[in-house]
Image (cartoon, rainbow, N blue to C red; front, side, top):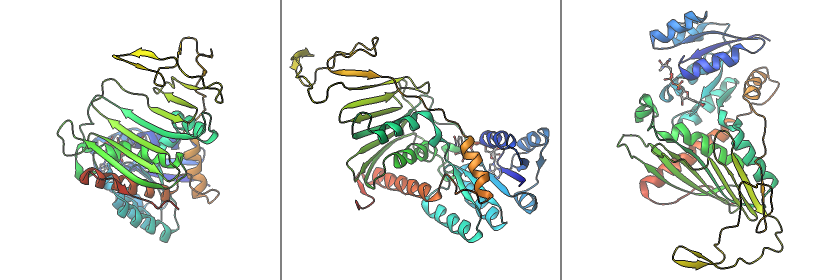
Length: 360
Ligand SMILES: NC(=O)c1ccc[n+]([C@@H]2O[C@H](COP(=O)([O-])OP(=O)(O)OC[C@H]3O[C@@H](n4cnc5c(N)ncnc54)[C@H](O)[C@@H]3O)[C@@H](O)[C@H]2O)c1
């Protein structure tokens, strides 16, 4: 089956999707719509059709997939118009500005019988996939705490992302990735959400956040985004009963430190630490240079590697349109994430922890 794609919003992500989809067999990116004439010039220069308007693009009977890569506030009207025109829709994250908008579009998608899915690309990031594997396989024993961070020091982008009306702020930018993945990693209801947002630069949108989730199975997770952090912390930190894992950076540097003999963990000798003595809080005598060596009853393991890429997402998108597969990004999971983010905002505004899902 041949597929013809319309890109709506030919900016950074519009161009990324054009390249990925154009490389697929039986898929042609026929054209794009953009409100910026310079973007339309680029569309023509790339040999594609620059449609005068969204209506004109949607009226093209050859188009069967609409990809939405505009700023956030335009996702909903474009998705509704595309579904009403009988097109399949893939939208950029955040799927919509809030859960009410997303519910409306999910209903419209159900009524149309067309595919509606979301580009949650960070579900394919290697650091997340590795941490999920350590969680699932209990490599360090049962997990107790997970911290997932993205740290920057350049403030937030100076475009529409600074405008609350346009869906700006770091929660809809990175929160929809970090919280989304923590929800998938821990298969348990989220009973409580507590959050603090930061406004270090005095903008009308948050430039950072700390969102803590308590799960019914006892796991605690913290999603952090900073934009004024000049010494970044590890991207993932996972504590389990018998060990700890960290992934420091995009290059996948990191380690797993885990008990070598968990039945006979020797008592530590008291040491002078600062102006006092400590025994149980004494650090393990780890020589990180000698990674494999067993020291003070701990072993140091390398972070496993997983080959990953976005091909699965695009292949699945086409397979879903052809009715061969269900979309790998199910919109219900995206809706749950937006609801957590709404609880997080409520928590930030009230200063209180918000009860979320029931434990059973
Ligand atoms: N998944 C990811 O990793 C990722 C990364 C960056 C951005 N995004 C998302 O992609 C979307 C676009 O971000 P970007 O960085 O590509 O933005 P961008 O500013 O680079 O591009 C947006 C384009 O949309 C056009 N546009 C604006 N309003 C429009 C409208 N009503 N109709 C048609 N065109 C319109 C603009 O002129 C611009 O060309 C956002 O929703 C953003 O959150 C996702």
